[in-house]
Amino acid sequence: MAEYVKLTPEMCNNWSRTFDWVSRNKPLIMTRLVNGTTVSQAQSKLWLITELAKLGSEVNDVGILGGWFAHMIVPLLVDELNVEKIINYEIDSEANKISTKFNRRFKDDGVYGISNRNVVTQSLPKYHKHDTIINTSCEHMFPMWKFREINSHLNDVLYVLQSTDDDQYEDHINCVSSADELADQAMLADVYYSGSKVLDNGMTRFLVIGR
Image (tube, rainbow, N blue to C red; front, side):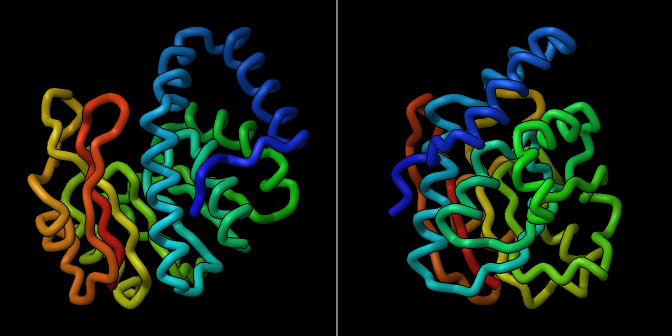
């Protein structure tokens, strides 16, 4: 069971340098950075990694859709699941720059990479042989069937998806009422895990894993 993000000297170096750089050069982004480093964010990512690990599926090459800063999910994938390759497909170029700083140690080792891309309108490059696709923010995007429609080469990979029924936010454009609805939206024929969890902030999150 994944209970925490491992705080290593290398992580301290990457994180402290990133927070310092953002505070000096991009102070308006600090609020977003704080919002991305909450108790609920950690709970959500730890839950995902725990359930994915329980399945025992081979996860070597991961594509993250809209991973934002990806500062929690990336070290968890590497440290807990020994993932060898991760690409974060994120449309926000500022987030990409900050994500690279947070994950500098993994980038330098050739494990982590960034692709500035709109995943709901642009297909993923076929030269990346992902075996797993992770989307922890499905509520911010069009239904996942649209992604699968333009990425037919990824139909047989493992999908790990999270969403919520909390529609009070303007950017939550695609909330769902249950984990079953999330699985249906993604057109998952085989569901290996389906569940819900109330996080520290009171939000209910849904998680499904399947093909």
